[in-house]
Length: 607
Ligand SMILES: Cc1cc2nc3c(=O)[nH]c(=O)nc-3n(C[C@H](O)[C@H](O)[C@H](O)COP(=O)(O)OP(=O)(O)OC[C@H]3O[C@@H](n4cnc5c(N)ncnc54)[C@H](O)[C@@H]3O)c2cc1C
Figure 1 (cartoon, rainbow, N blue to C red):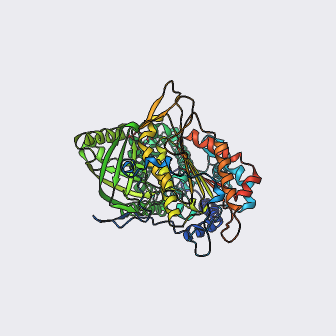
Figure 2 (cartoon, rainbow, N blue to C red):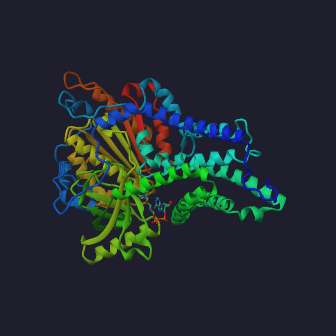
Figure 3 (cartoon, rainbow, N blue to C red):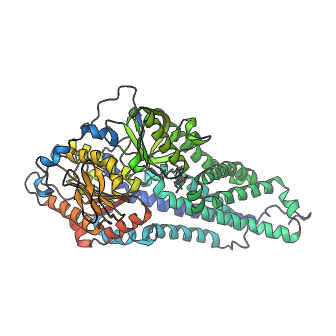
């Protein structure tokens, strides 16, 4: 303590400083060393992905005359699909789900993507254990990653030190983690690209690392607040500019934590968004002015934040969207014909509606929506936005209002940023069979994936022989607007068998009209226009759906002669509520090891 009774962060002996510096570096070497190992482990997947030629990372905008689509003229817009529908299909020759009978040469000259499993086959039993859910929303692997991160930080905190008596160690540990936390928060994530995961998949590590960093920052601050208060010198100390900035840094960090909890993200997303933005902006100068030695970390964060913003600006475009209402689904359909490629199925964009009719600040809000069309589709980029709260509610109401004036003529200026996320390195077309299980508005993921896979099949770029899309909705009526699109997709499937199974969970007491003369009947599954399009009551039996897909994939390998190709696994895509994901992951885990081995592995992508 200084003779005048004031105490800045009392400089520890230079030996202690050097030890703290060395331990902080060790901690980051451990963490980035582990990240480097994961990147190396996943390198074969990256090579396989690059060889699969799976699309560009930037949306391609064209003027009035977009190039001819390369997907066999498909449409993903539920509204325009009606015109291309051939409802008499059921009376024509039916395609049967006999996978053995349909096969296509995969070599030589085939453009089928190489299948690179995410892990060597030998490690599959271990992977099965690691993917098992241990707490809601978290697999054993995710928990193991978080635990290892915790151990490394505990090593940093206790290595020849005690966080309750050593006032600087916790501060250095806290600040030294900020670059990693910022890198994990980037929407155009460079770290995610290297690791092969989208930002939303890595977000749980961002949240956890952020919380530990804030905890360490608080331990550091409480030490001084307690000490100065006891000595009666709090006011004198906190009046010193560097300490005042330390307090600002603490408040910014606590603001980031308090308003990023699930309560705020769910109940008032805007509060979370704005407090996060303000907290991050305040954090940079506060860190630099608190201690100049923190500048390298603060500058690293500024660099990562600025780079992300720059990349996002490059990924943004302003366009005119055609807006239609889908009242049966309580959704608005936005179609942007001038954006025709530059994304992969399952990726999402961030949408801003540039219209005063979205409310006073509605035009300033951005919301994520999964792209419902495949790149190259006739209608360009299609988004299906379901009413969930105020903003989406206003959009659905506006679409109805525009439709009520002149049907199909509604137009809105939109700001589109993206694409982001998606299945990263998982190439669905490189598997023998795929099952897509979606709930509610997760159908956007299912639609774009099916459409992309059918287009690849059309261009001889897919190994898939069997695709099943399972959609779980509360009411059978939700299916009505999509019946034409579903039927048209089934009609367009060539050598791949496409099955679409819709399940409704609400019990019916009477028949409910679904489309034209088709009805949903209580307790009985019905085929709608085509045997491969079914509507069934109750929850799907995921086990039997997966078993059927495995059988179909294995059927492929029985083909002999020069057209034969090896069975290359089952891909499972999930998009929907957490509970749906948990049930599907559990059913995937129940597939025994021998079957997994025979089928070439089972891999899951969860949106
Ligand atoms: C990656 C991703 C893809 C999505 N794709 C679709 C889709 O294709 N179709 C569809 O209908 N819905 C989709 N959603 C959900 C959609 O983004 C929300 O329903 C919408 O943002 C709700 O906004 P609101 O103000 O109307 O509702 P609110 O009442 O404000 O929020 C309802 C829920 O949406 C969440 N939310 C609100 N704003 C945002 C935001 N800016 N970013 C992330 N979450 C937010 C809240 O946490 C809350 O849980 C997707 C969400 C994500 C994260």
